[in-house]
Length: 292
Length: 266
Ligand SMILES: Nc1ncnc2c1ncn2[C@@H]1O[C@H](COP(=O)(O)OP(=O)(O)OP(=O)(O)O)[C@@H](O)[C@H]1O
Ligand SMILES: [Mg+2]
Image 1 (tube, each protein chain N blue to C red):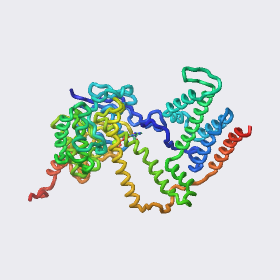
Image 2: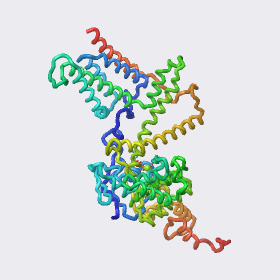
Image 3: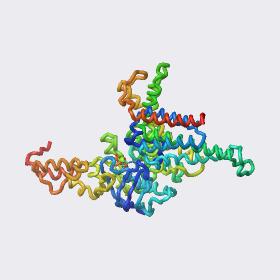
Image 4: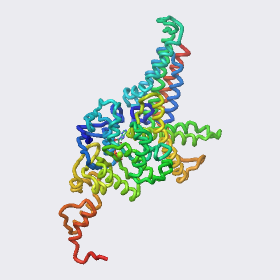
């Protein structure tokens, strides 16, 4: 069964009823459709991480309802029997390498499925497959996860969540702190999972290029409110508004706006580098491009 | 984990917030010492009024203090019950086997409870109104005479302030790790004892690994900026004794002397 996630009038307060209370989510309504790729953007402190922790009921709304598949979560929901949700919605936290603890990489990846009753042998087989999926060399499997590089640890952690075989994969800034190459490898992994296994993806990111290249739906958060949602094209069509909210443009779009000042014409603002190139080439003076 | 109020700092500009941390430390210690001299209605009345006056001067609602007491509720109940059943003497109200509720038992239970609450509340005033690092500075300054005896006061204070600084960080981190492991299907606080102990491992190991890594980073950063143990360092925060401190000291000394006076000379 396809799992969709719906928020109705969701409010969340951290430490409600104390002098430290923080109203972190304000009246959020949204829907994550099965098979979609949703990007969540917004300045730091805008409530992105708080939002996604409702997706697998790690947090329960202070008021309002969150519906995950056929489960309805409200403030009154008991903490028991939430485990099936954790399997349906896999959650990769910011700096997930901080959750590793087993003696070997393979044991760490196999930890999740074993919590859901998968036998040790089956879990290890699954772990091996997932390690391959995220591009970890087989020789690393028997090493301690603490001896790996930062990028490798990140992959182990992601494999550990994939091993739950979730339907929805939620990632909180999975590329933070990685080099450009590591970043693009993780992003390619995510798109491949979506295309090959039909996973629903929710991605928190500060990289507008990733939003432009991969997402089909964008949620913009600001000060705990959902400011705007829509297709990347709709969101990036208003640079002034984005600037007001301290958000950037994808690099292709940014360059296109600059070229527009210089007399270039665009029928539709490009989001990806390839689109940009397609639109500029016909406008270049003859002889400007030389083929070598 | 988010609900713990005990030992937290609540920013503000009240009379108590503006006091020198040394004054607050000294007054809290004096108060706690004198609590043990209080023994009858009048002495407890003075102690209670002094405490309430300090609560008011801290401009933090009494309800917040009470919430700070709640985590200790069971400990209080337990202490009271022990006192009720094991303090013997005086009129016996109720007896069942070796369980006896006597007048002396009730008296000493009431006394202990009262002391308990007063001591917790006065330390809570200190922690609510004083930043942890200020407390560390205050302790360092108060202990500074020990330097003459070659006691490593500055090192001790540094250890203390680092520890205090990282308690909230560690708690946040523990929460994050727990959430990550929950997402991988761990049920905390469920199952038998063995099961529960097993669920601690996936929290403790990452927590320790991170704490050690952070300790190494901090020490590198400190050395890179020229820190050397045992060298005299200047302070960014200067402790200054103000009129509020003298005024508070006077009020405390008068009230606390009255308690001791009532106990010994009435
Ligand atoms: N455990 C907590 N207790 C109290 N307040 C919190 C807690 N976690 C987050 N907050 C507050 O809630 C608000 C939203 O935080 P959140 O972590 O969701 O932001 P974010 O959009 O993920 O930011 P970033 O981009 O920096 O990760 C912030 O104001 C933050 O200070
Ligand atoms: Mg975040």
